[in-house]
Length: 102
Image (tube, rainbow, N blue to C red; front, side, top):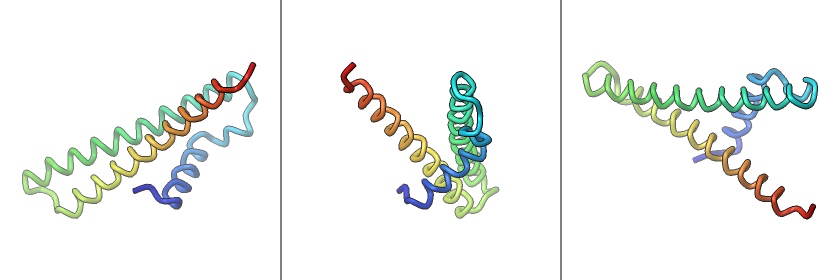
């Protein structure tokens, strides 16, 4: 489950990874930074999922503890939920923009 603290941490990490998007020039540079930030977050979520899969395989082979598997799966789940929450907010914002009168 996503908590306010985990969302705040994810937002802070995204801001650090983007290098402070607000301080850059507006326009295309801002768009490129946003795209890079989104790609970075998605890559991290994919990496967490792969790490969880590796831990599961290692546990099945008897090379990893169950707590390591649970931690990796929990981290992957949290990162996926954060990505889905951002996706939902982007879709909601898009729908609001489409409802605006011209």
